Image 1 (cartoon, helix red, strand yellow):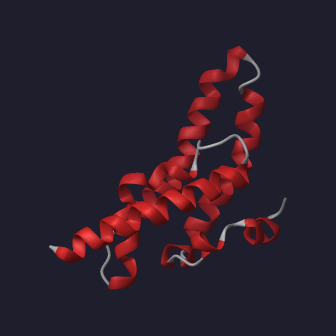
Image 2: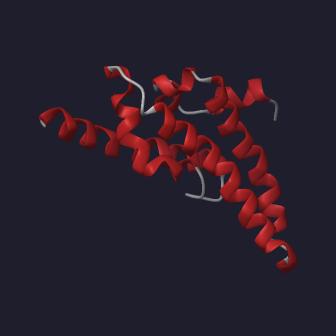
Length: 123
């Protein structure tokens, strides 16, 4: 799958977020999906389990770190991103299939972000 085709498969709830406008974030999510294929293959051999784990954590942390850093900005449109910092790594590892992982991440991020944003605004 190429980058253009991959973008069409990303759920609207993720694409609608202001963080999606950052090219580095989009590329980090794409990298995670590309790496997932390699991680799956590496997990089949006991000798490469540690390599698979490191690859999985490294690629997943890129989008998580970008999300956390982006949340430190200003503006109301970034409030949901700030609320997400505690669950920023959810894009990775939720399920074995990429679409399922992204859907699950989007659902959890939406639910958690909404509750945290409401709590922040009430302060």
